[in-house]
Length: 262
Ligand SMILES: Cc1cc2nc3c(=O)[nH]c(=O)nc-3n(C[C@H](O)[C@H](O)[C@H](O)COP(=O)(O)O)c2cc1C
Image (cartoon, rainbow, N blue to C red):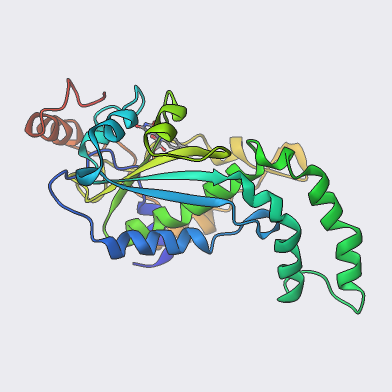
């Protein structure tokens, strides 16, 4: 599948087959994609703890349940806990030096000196502030996005999950002080049909993007839209015919509560 098709077909998949194990190699590919995602200052603060639900303890699985995750945690054979290892920010200077060393950053004969006099002191000064929500969460989002696309390309489904109480999850899995979970990602083989009920609604393009001035919508070219449509980037809008019936049948088979919503 071409990249455009992968991006266009990706959906949050909430109905995962609880009885079909996920090959560990497929999870590794997801993690490899996360590792090479972009990080600010190349800080590499994004880490992940992979939970194999079947071999996790009862207390660990129980800690994952939340009002927003609902039945999904019960179905998913694998749950990835994506977190920020904030201590990584203490080595920000070292990461910047590596960037200069490898030719990604800085140029000219004084590049090392300039780095030591500008960026390194700056990162050292604001290092603690950078540990809080903000830039590292952005990095985490990029890592999860890349790993999601690789998951999808391998035939897997995923859905990001929040939690009412990450501290409970962190305690159950033995997280260290300073490590903070941002999101849990359920992973497994979809029970749903490939289109997962079609493209979920989005606000109009014109409402979201601007050019030069905040009042000036970014011009959307129909030609580009047509090109992307030809590349299977855009899919039929949700809900596709029979979606409701499909979900009802899954909910019945796996004894999910009500319509399967929570
Ligand atoms: C950071 C993040 C957290 C999310 N948390 C939840 C969640 O707790 N429960 C859930 O069912 N879906 C969750 N989602 C999925 C979104 O609701 C989903 O993106 C939305 O329904 C649009 O569907 P799509 O991803 O298929 O386009 C989350 C998505 C993101 C990016």
